[in-house]
Every structure is written in structure tokens, then in C-alpha cells.
Image 1 (cartoon, helix red, strand yellow):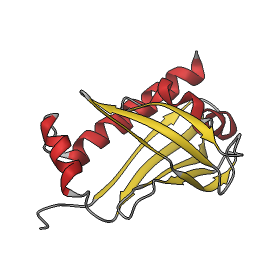
Image 2: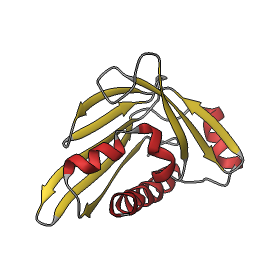
Image 3: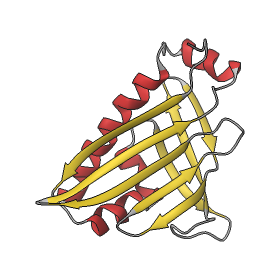
Length: 155
């Protein structure tokens, strides 16, 4: 087992709404503060004004007293089916949301894949905030994100 593990987490939730309606909330990155417990806000940057492949946005994140920003790039955007983006840097994760129609609604699958371990300075910052298992923290946050998505779509 690697001393510094990679992160691969998948969670899912069935929500009583159409795939298109759920996609529209998730792919509107300006609404991320309503959904994510860690990414508190985001805005489209450059010439981007919505979800399309190649569009970039700035996401602002908080973990305890630590905050940071990233500028992910949308890698897949197919309304009602999939929204995916890649966080830059050699170790940046890929976040993916899939929308599968099922009886009574949509099964939303959220996943994150970070193929390379975070660098030492990020791991140190996480430890300073009490995080000893980043994968478990992310899984909990993803569950909360999908619960918040359900609240947002049914409100």
C-alpha cells in the first residue's frame, strides 16, 4: 500500500427529478456553494459563460481555516447525461457527474479520480486541519453534495 494513496471515490443517489433538471443545477458552477461543503463558490472565467468542453471556471474551496482556488477545465458536457471537469496541475483530480434515468427519477453518480497523490504541502495543510483520510472526507462531502442537490431541485 502506498504511503500517499491516490483517491478514487464514487457515490450515488436517486433523486425524483429529470436528468436534464439535475444536470442544469450541477453544471451551473455558480451554484456550487449551494451543493458542496468544500467548494464554496465558483465562476466562469475567460470567455466561458456555461458548461461546454474546454470552458474554465475558478472554484474557491475551504477546509477549516485553509482556503485555496483552482481553475478546472470542463472535459465533458452532455446535458442530462454527464458533466465532467479536470482540476489542473499534474495531480489534479477529475470530477464526474452522471445522470441515469430510472423509475421515479434519476440516479446521480458522482465520482472523483485523482490518479497521483497530492504533493507534500497539500497533505501537510490537510493534516493541520485534522484530515487523516482525505478519501473518506471527500466521500462524506460527496454524499452531502448529492443530498444538497436533492434539496435544491425539490425546493
